Length: 634
Ligand code: M6R
Image (tube, rainbow, N blue to C red; front, side, top):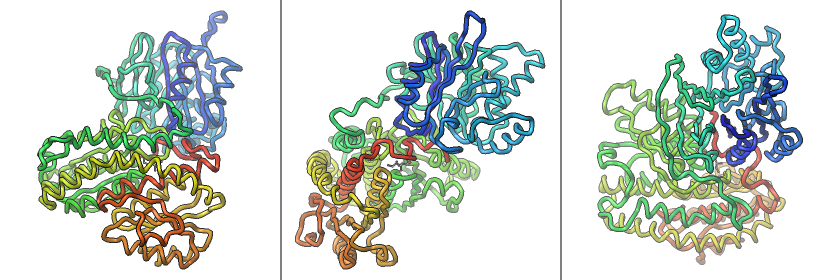
């Protein structure tokens, strides 16, 4: 979603801002812009140079090449449209009427309509449809008032003006502000949206996500909610909302990567699908190493006591992370025998279940920045803390791929799935990392609750350890098969995925992947549910893709597939090669394996099929329309 980059330094800001924005491109955006404070030494005045462009960053670059934006202090932004269409006029930065104050913002200003109409009544003309534009106008108004009160022009005046405006804003925001009359100063502030300050040599770079800092610095300070930072070439001063100075040292962060490159792959998504054996290998080395006692074979970074007295698990997540959570809940209940429920994070916040005792709440988010998930976790924390009884105490665990994310700062117990930066908007290798983490939790709880014998636990551990090799072979084979099969989907408008039991969430995930990147309408159903309605959609134009692995529901899924075949649907099977699976018109074969680990394999063919269908259609696979990698608004 939107990305902020801002710089105070001694070098020209624009190239550094553009480079930073490029590194945030993967988050998803539809327009971009930047502004610098340009000092005109001849005329002894400063002004804001601002350029904005619809579409890709290359459009902005072209504009700046034609007409430069000089200055050592600047702000940049990639916008993912919320209020107002993705047009140039709505791209950030937004300026006040005098053109002297420029602002970029991430998040949503919920009371913008009221603020806007108040400003309009005072004669202020707006030039965009955004919620953001109220901010520069309000800051400008405060600046005038403070000047009238006799405040001296400079950083402190701007700080005061920005703070007064923040006090009236409702919603979530991360902002960066520059002012032509105070050319050395940058103000940044945040509430419920990430903002980090990187300490370079004689310069400071602010950004909404760590990849923007690659090649710049590893020394980073993360701003907390309701904090504001006044940044000049001389240093960074942090203040709370009451204007009290706060002192906090930056931290050296390790292990963040830039978006690297695609290597020989056409798209990041394909590269990331091919990286999955490595994802599994790294996860196993880190969390399921050989040599640990069978009673506790999983090396998650928590004391044993962390798991004590947990009676129930609730999992909050969105999108693909929710599908991983659904497989997780199946494993926790069916393998480990502990009750587990999955919630859409966006629903949970406003309709939580009644408080149950001794609950572990797990938030799953690969980006660690999903606003719905963070807000749901924080609501749950607060309502449990308000109870003041030990059995209702809040116990939270985060599962993420970004150790330096907002989730990691919000939740004290975090498992980093360690899949490496995922650039493609469609989650693939992070899904695998999340799944593996749930296998780890299921093994821990099965051991603690003695719901499985040590033999069964050891068998599952061994199956997981054999996964990297299985994945390697599977991906190579299915890459070719999926490319071939993708030709059949040239005019397909609807696809149905069927799965049951542990593979039902894989049907949901397959449908999500296909619609995200190919824009083909796809639905995932529990196979037994099809006859209760969706079967009405079937005819020869609608492919039905059934996920069928040997196990308790194998025959049932095959019968459900036959029902589709009887309605002329083209039947595709993600299933082992067996006499029973000859019913499929096309088979995407998976190795015969235990039902427990089957989702780790059945997910692969549908990832590759979606990829090849979208690539054949010539679509922007890595940055599909309307989607963002980090969904930082609710
Ligand atoms: O970063 P998160 O895992 O919290 O993201 C949640 C969803 O936005 C995400 O999974 C989305 O559905 C992906 N684009 C899936 O490919």
